[in-house]
Length: 315
Image (cartoon, rainbow, N blue to C red; front, side, top):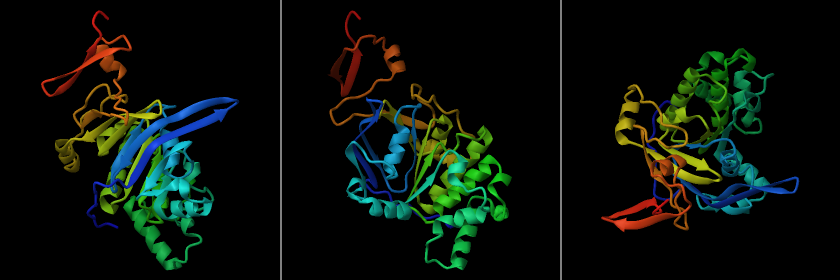
């Protein structure tokens, strides 16, 4: 596992979310968590889905992981529609292809098992030999920097160490996709940065696709693509600049990350607005304020190879 492999990223998406709609009903009231969301993820990507509470990011994570089904639309893995799988097929698919890391360590680890036993737990019904299981467990412990904690219990570890054990546990079945829900939400800033570096290292060395769902904007500086979600739809994306990637790989100090809502463009990523299938684009509140747009009507025209949007005359 220590050898870095070459990731294969093709034009065909590894995961495709097509017009995802998710409606929840509570006490006779319908809440639309996702509103026709479209998203493509390439194999081997390291990306974060960032948004405020209630934006729909956790709902999207559950759909990507096959833990929930959409009210409309579909999630495709390699062209295969998850909604067409029965319960047993979906369970097998999750086991063979997806690893999960949750924010609460109590959801990831069993306190009465040692670190090694927790990591091996997903292999309980595997036909793999005991020796092979132990070898894989020790290799993962080395990969996350916890070789000396094999016989410790979760309660004897720090929050950051527990999250590293959770990551090793999620990787024991050698999944193609690792889904993380607020993995840095319960640790301090220093530990958060350490975990972020670990995510990037795992992505580079194992070639695994990693999708992190979070509101932690500090993750922006260490992932290749950032998808901003708002009101159940993708509002914008940020792609890491080549010059910043080179600085990151060289271990240089990072610039301060931009604001969570994407109103300010930082030095690390290039920001892009997203056109939906109907040709609609979202303008952030800050951008509308800077342009003096206070009405729900704007003027749009084509000028010198550009599409120009400006406020309505007299408004």
